[in-house]
Every structure is written in structure tokens, then in C-alpha cells.
Image 1 (cartoon, rainbow, N blue to C red):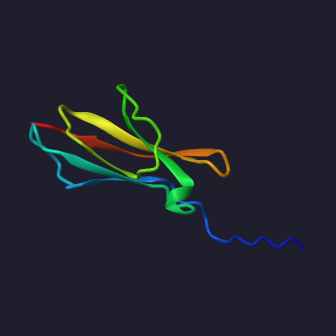
Image 2: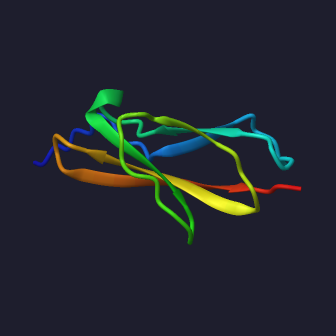
Image 3: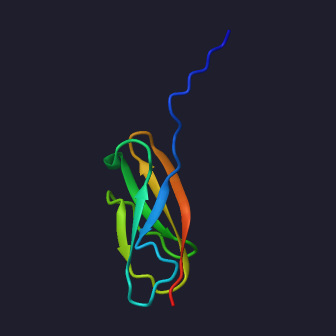
Length: 97
């Protein structure tokens, strides 16, 4: 007889933006928040990636405020130092008029 016991499931990382609008105007800023949904916030180092562009360095801040200049895709990744584990979030699309 085999008994399997599942105690929770690791949640995916989540990138959210504030304000959460469909279109932004040149000069407006957007705040990105990266949640790993696992462990404590200070267990992770966070990185925001602008797809096919640049990668901001890992640091201990889970929120970034950026001024979007053009339509692009963003994703966040987290590195959990304790377990040497990295995982990435959903992709968020930003359109600037």
C-alpha cells in the first residue's frame, strides 16, 4: 500500500503592474511587482527582464518603477539563494501611445 501526501504546491511566480492599464502614454511610469509565491520575500533576489532587450541586475527589491518608452514585454525572475533555485513569471505586455 502506497500513500501519497501532498502538502501544498509550489505556485508560479507572478509579475503585476500598477497602474494596470491597457495603454500608457509617453512619460508615464509603471511599477512592476514580482512575487515568487514561495518562501519569504527576503529569500529571493529579483530581476526584471525587458524581453529581447535588457536585463536589470538581480537585487533584493521585488518592485521596480520604470518609464516605458515603447511597446514591449516584461518578465520577472527570482533567484532563491538558499536552494540555488531560479524561476520566472508570466509575461506582461506594455503598450505606449
